[in-house]
Image (cartoon, rainbow, N blue to C red):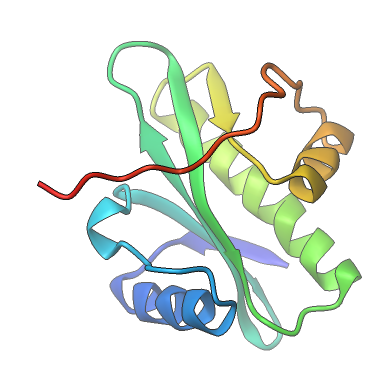
Length: 130
């Protein structure tokens, strides 16, 4: 599994995966400028973006998506590579923490990777179009 920076053509792939997974609207306009792709022998296996919170030392991992059809082992390998890439990108631009809001299964995975739970209240994603 390798990691590289998001390229513009990756966004169409992520949008297709999002649609195939039935995850609602994929808001291209909401994608942060920093993102990473995990690739295996078949091409992109997963993607994640890193939102920058100005002047607070915290970045946020967002829009995590995996290629449909991955086995649990493949998804685990891609997830590990993505989080390593996100952490590296955050350090490179001066952040000391990365925050992620995760579904329960993903949160369990992140705990095994050394992430700490800081808030276990259920959340509902909200968006207001202006």
